[in-house]
Amino acid sequence: QVQLVESGGGLVQAGGSLRLSCAATGSIDSINNMAWYRQAPGKQRELVAAITSGSSTNYADAVKGRFTISRDNTKNTSYLQMNSLKPEDTAVYHCNAKGLYYSAEYRNYMPFDAWGQGAQVTGSS
Picture 1 (cartoon, one colour):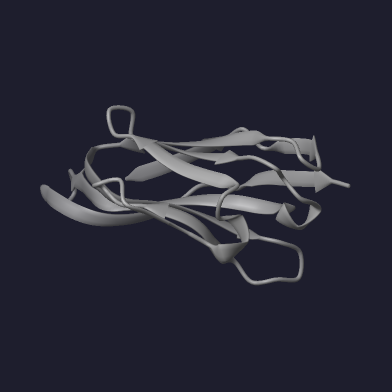
Picture 2 (cartoon, helix red, strand yellow):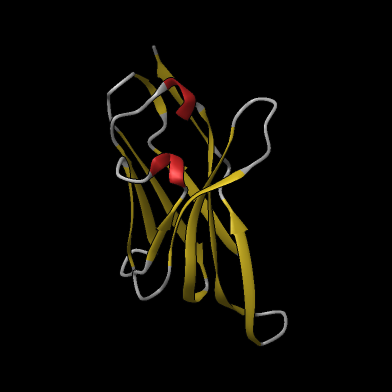
């Protein structure tokens, strides 16, 4: 199985910066898309940013120009650099990764769609 472990959340004043990390572990063969989502209290989970295996990126309009997603394929890790944070960025941020892993049970490569445990990001006014 594949697990994602997030780190880097916290409390920051408006205008400040934070960087989230998401490390994937397990019998990973390859990771295609990596992404970050967020869910604020009382709201639906929304896509914040995504990056393909070829490093093409896309962002939610609300974070364009402020957030940057990147990945280190040698470490199976994605990053979300968040600058100029606003109070409305306050949410639990979840990372997601899709790819292939080797299943000992099936003795074959199987697809995975894994989620991190979530990291609280709070932008104070």
